[in-house]
Length: 269
Image (tube, rainbow, N blue to C red; front, side, top):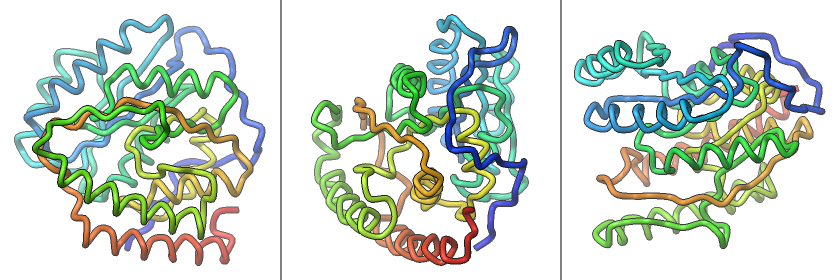
């Protein structure tokens, strides 16, 4: 599997306070990795832009297009003409992890949040990520299993989601035993980072696909960064995820072993 190449230098300083926003510079960057899904892109990006425009500070919206097909690419070009959004396109399909890392390192914000393109977490949940970073945390993690979190779903998806939840809990147990001992939900597609945390973590990533979540949190833990788990509302109203539970579950277990080997080789120092 191809590693994510370093895109910028990283600082190893563990004390990562969020500075006062600079006048005229983005304070908040929102990164959206995209692969196809043309039918939902307009709704997602307009919802995010509406949220960002309501903030009292400068913001930026960055879409990283992971070499989508012509429909999604055409939709992104049309949206880009109508509202402020930076679109970065990968020359080939590189994976969600690669795309998030590329967006994080292209961003200028003091707080940087990535969210999934299906907007399973309502746009205003981004404010909870920002609040957690502003309270002195380096990384904010949406946690769907906290007692305060809420699921909104159609009953027709219950069987699929129950199976996915059970597999997710089994995977998380392996993660907690082997790598990141305190995080209850490593795979939620909504996470926030301070600027310096992002610049420390994302150049060190080696896993370009779904295992990048665990790798990023392991790097944060290894460098002594402060992580906050944030309760969220999770909305599930579309067709099942493109994640193949059996195939991608096996791949993610392989990724756990890869992270352990990387740590032994001091890849994350």
